[in-house]
View 1 (cartoon, rainbow, N blue to C red):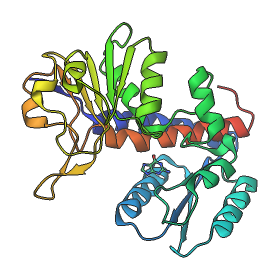
View 2 (view 1 turned 30 degrees about the horizontal axis):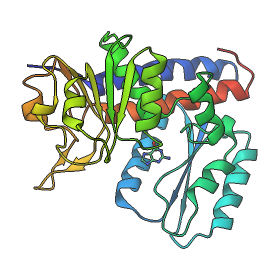
View 3 (view 1 turned 90 degrees about the vertical axis):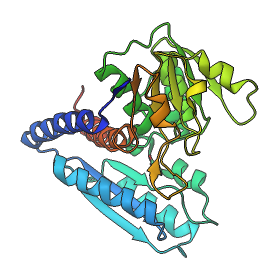
Length: 285
Ligand code: GUN
């Protein structure tokens, strides 16, 4: 039976560390600030944004919410980002994705000052990640690395397989595993022999967005299985990309959904916001 990696507990530790750093910064007159922009009324986005604001408050980070109607124009959104770029009390800017149809998300992300891009979605930050000289890491992949580190799971020399090639998770995840000296394979919808490739993985990261996509016959006994999915099963119940009940029986470590990777994403966002504040206030790490 696999050990369940308790993302909630590990995230709580990271958040406590962040709160400590925030308290130390307060003595230097610095209060990290995050602006969260949400456009439209997608219920999942609303929940994420509420959770992010609550986590900020708990860590002592100042946050501002900008909730705009779905009819917001590209120009209005770009103007808001430009204003936030200039705001001295705001060190991090996050535009919750997805944006309503008709808005150009790429242009919005490119308009964010890279120093305030706590999601690490700006091309300049993405490029820095590729090179390995980065200020911020995207929150979800960074959270996965933190989970592996917390459990003292070695990445170097391991066969790491990432299923999914999104800009938010799959691609940066592969790059971070590579920076940690893993031997990395990225699989996607056109991959041939997916099962065979997955069966070779010592560390398998599922970021597909399909409920229970990874079945036990795709997993090598003793593998570490990380589930980035946030899906709904046939009964509408929250589940991940991994068939947890069956994979748990053969893996060595596994992350549950909920309570695995999810809580780490917010913890890493808080950490990035503090890093941004330090950098903008000339406090070197
Ligand atoms: N939507 C889903 N995940 C994320 C995220 O990490 N950041 C932003 N901005 N939007 C998201």
